[in-house]
Length: 204
Image 1: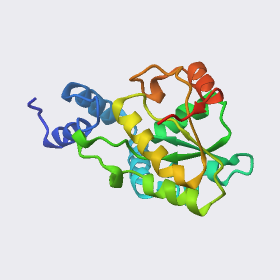
Image 2: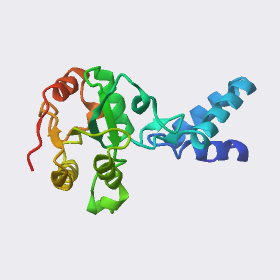
Image 3: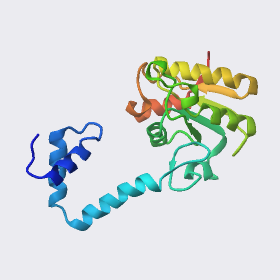
Image 4: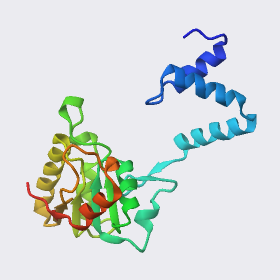
């Protein structure tokens, strides 16, 4: 796509690096920003820089947070002994939207997928095991495996279950109201809420 301005071209190329944004959409966004007030564009730019420089991963659960410990982990109203293991931060948001869960989380940051080069050491399994073994920030009584119902999700859940067996901690998984192959963030809130409420013992 040949554009009349090198500056516009660079803006379009940067916007087109976003997922789901093609060159035409990127051009439309760039022209829209061009028509906005300069301060509004500066505010957007500063917010994006802060997103990269000031946003943290919680030291305990690896959820996104403005502080070292996220509001969920620091809340006195949560069930500290209950830890729900999820693939990503979108899954935390999906479960929170059900308003059916009052425990803590542990965000793995992915699932085991040899075909994609993702192994045990590439996701936050070691920190989960350490969390259970040390009881930091609180003793763990139950771990809920809430991973995608895919081969990779099941493989990851099975591995975690085997690693946790020597600790004696209770391990459960979502009731299979979640369709096989579905990601949690695409599951409707009622189904997801019921799956949390009616979780079942994890069977290897």
